[in-house]
Length: 232
Image (cartoon, rainbow, N blue to C red; front, side):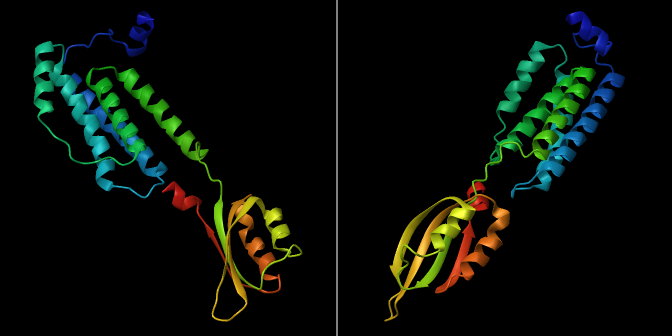
């Protein structure tokens, strides 16, 4: 296995001499691969916490880590001293999204591979990571949208067993639960109903509302979908 990696990289598995040319190549490669990671993050970001500074930081982190690896070289003493110096730094910025932490970790690893002259590992690893991220974005892997919704309307009088409302809800919902039925008061025989729904297909919400509007005696029909709020 070691021989395979030696042939693939064209260099021994131990880091080669850190000549100025090698350091320059490592930093340029880290810059290019860091940009690739940043572009993939930019195009696949779908949350609400987008930050321009974070995207730029992915590139800077990759280059800085590559420089750190060049500084350390093969010196254990330098590595320990650098760890002690970095321990003084306190980061107060809170990363809210776990996905952002994964990108930071990717940038660190790519920078380490570039700085230690593992060029093949850096290039192949970055390409594979980007392809995986793009795949997860395209197929929306892990998305869970149960289409929970709340339906409210006002009915002129209590709905009896012959009311068409339950049959309409069965057509469009996997399940539904009556949450409340309250009289509006003010001397008018009106009852406000509230249902919790499990919508089968959110694209048919308008058709559901149209069917309910055809029912005589229903007013102020309001359907609120909750899946986007729950995701946030």
